[in-house]
Image 1 (cartoon, rainbow, N blue to C red):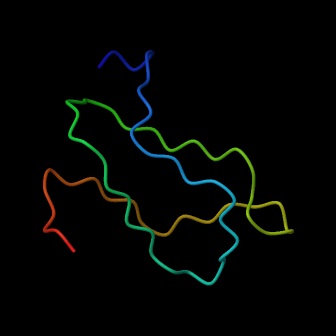
Image 2: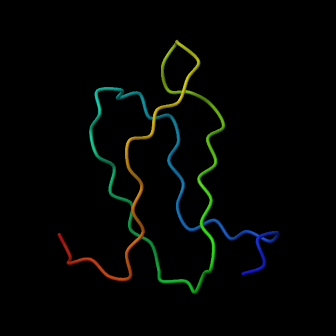
Length: 63
């Protein structure tokens, strides 16, 4: 809530798909003022990250 202390809500590791598929990450609700996306290692060989859209929603319907 202060922009300094962070809580990890979801983690994706070793993702090798680079074709623009959508990742839907579900996690337990948390109260937050800020969100942070931390990219530590590219999933493909060209050493880059691409993010087309990021959405955070209060509630989404179950699958």
